[in-house]
Amino acid sequence: MKKLVSLMLLTAMMVVMLTGCGGSKASSAVKFGTNAEFPPFEYVTAAGVIGEYDGIDMAIVKEFGAQNGLEVSIENMEFDSLLIALENGQVDAVISGMTITEERAKSVDFSVPYYTATQVMIVDQNSDIKSAADMAGKKIVVIQGYTGELCVQDLGYDYEAFKKGTEAILELNNGKCDVVVIDSATAQKYVKDNPNLKIVEDPSAFETEEYGIAVKKGNTELLDKINASIEKMLADGTISEWSVSYSEAE
Image (cartoon, rainbow, N blue to C red):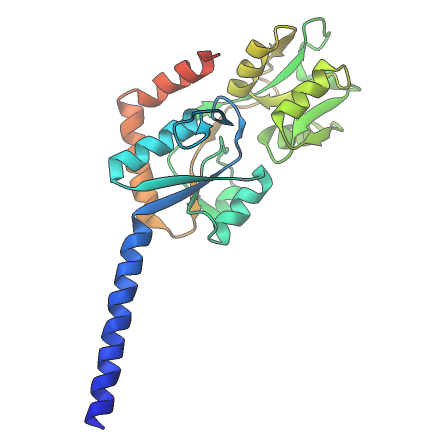
């Protein structure tokens, strides 16, 4: 009996030791989910700051890892799959120009905001659209799951949703739609790359919104680290510098 008890204690100790080692290893790496179709925040390029991924959000992730001595990696997926992947444990956090909303906050915990944006309309240079009201009767394109889709829904307009911003812009360039509703910073990048297009703003129709990093509900340890890093990057102007440099990059 004593031998049996001793064996059980030894087994328990080994399990604790192995669990401890596993926990230490897991806590030294953080996987971020993103949708790398949202320049200048995240996009795929030949040589990114994290593998092939680059942009404002990717620079934030890299700096977060450096500040906390953590190995960071990126999992690229459809925007609509990000919060599901977070809930399932496929990723530890989500950073993808994601707007903090009451609805999303029911299922995830958000970091402090790190960027303020608004929705705008991208149209052809010769378009007669000058406000959101002018979209009535026009063919509107949005990006599936983005805030722009919700805004167009709230305005009561019919629309077509694409999974990628590049597809939406191609649709506009080919004359197959009249307007694309999307976040302001991304719109600036697309218009810079397409001189035949322009941005139309309407503050009365589109309110400002804030981007945050999402973690699983109750993951306060990771959230506290993310918040501390964001606040440092905001305080020293790092995020502002990246916002300018990435927006101006060719």
